[in-house]
Image 1 (cartoon, rainbow, N blue to C red):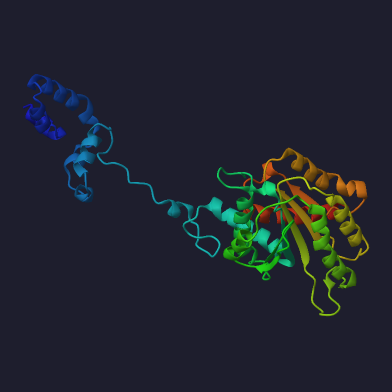
Image 2 (image 1 turned 90 degrees about the vertical axis):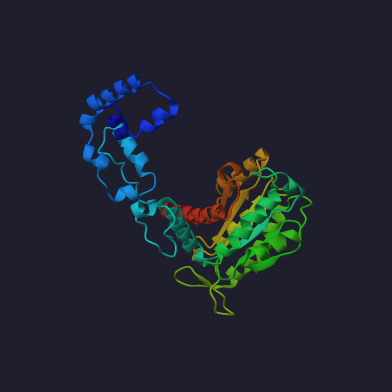
Length: 340
């Protein structure tokens, strides 16, 4: 009699193998039949179904005897992509979760905002840029190089002219960079050295652009047009990537540029913007940049054309972060003018 319940449970051979005493097995079998069997769908234990042909089907049926269930395990949940129901498009690939798709959509909106702007980048190539950056084993110079190498192909989506890169000390300047390799070659050809003449380089870069604006014809919508070529003069976003306080006075150059814009009241209010992005955690540099952002336009009674991003808000510096900084600065200036 005792073999029958043991066969039901599939443990008769196990009992013989390990030499369990038969009286103990009889007691256990009786306990199973008395308390567990009434709650189990016995037909499901012996009926042949399509699940019997699956691997480990015996183990599934044995487990069900002690799970107080119907004799079979629940089906596995459907794949994530079936639940999410995300449609595959150019910017929303099927294998990406919704959160990443939202980030990509936000990136596209930012790029669209920058479509009417030329991106000009002024990189700090002073000696301190050879110090360690946000990641261990990566210098500030390498961090800037990696970020701009990723920015170049992204910027091409809104600026067909590519990005322009200038340096504080090195005379080399490259325009129309559209690929990551082109950006890396530029950085490889420059060795960080010297001080941080931010003000002097700002004046050198902004003066030719401001001269073009003063000679341009301004349309009713505030768009400047070159009188000689008849082409629209694109707006400028100037990014200054630096790790320390300037060794000269950048305030003078910024105030001069802002006052020059004030002489053209019919000009678009967001024609020019300067973005300072800090690499490294130099507290003195953070404070000096904050003064440029918060106090400069108040002291000089000039338009606010400066935005700063300190180290703690953007580390490490990345292409996505730079795009957010550029678009955010434009939107902030637009909102400020609406309030006025």
